[in-house]
Length: 286
Image (cartoon, rainbow, N blue to C red):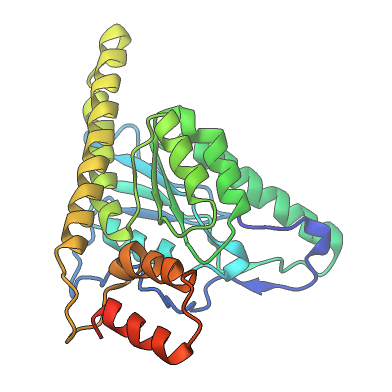
């Protein structure tokens, strides 16, 4: 949900479309050209989402997704428009709750009404869509996003991207494992996971009854397996970049190897600062 505070505390309009520097390069580069699908729809509140025409011959191939992740009153990186562009070649409806401006009402009553409309829009869309995508910006707290994950983790239509450096990553990953929610730790791995989930949504429209339940279970297991493969491939790729004295360590290597080594080294009984620095430089290969 867009607001991270109660309506009566919102004193002025807040722009949610302002550029937020992606200081940790969480997002990927966009392709030079993107061909938008004829049936692609991007929807934001307060306008009612367009899920396509049920009478159309190709309606069974149309799916929908809700971008339920970090907003934090505009402090989160602009991942929603970025992912919307990446999804635009698909035959889908994207419901993005990150509206341009929040809290434009001049009175408390007007702000309360806007808050109610926003929350109702999100709740209805969450119930209606086929897939719910959660992205946790690791530089935010995102309490409402965690609330929504708790509401929908058991639904069978959730995919998650949560970096291990998010402040509650352990909780998020545990919930995902508990309820067989496919999750990845890097934004670059999120798109293929979403694409597979959407493909399964379309495939399942051909089944009903017990057969539907059986096919859902098969595809749910495949989604989790795919997420595990993506994570393992990412870790293997990062480990393959070997640190040498001539190169700076990658962020991954620093977090996995050098930072724990330095913590352990700092606890050593070396009192002379010059000797400690020399030993530390040798340890790191500098």
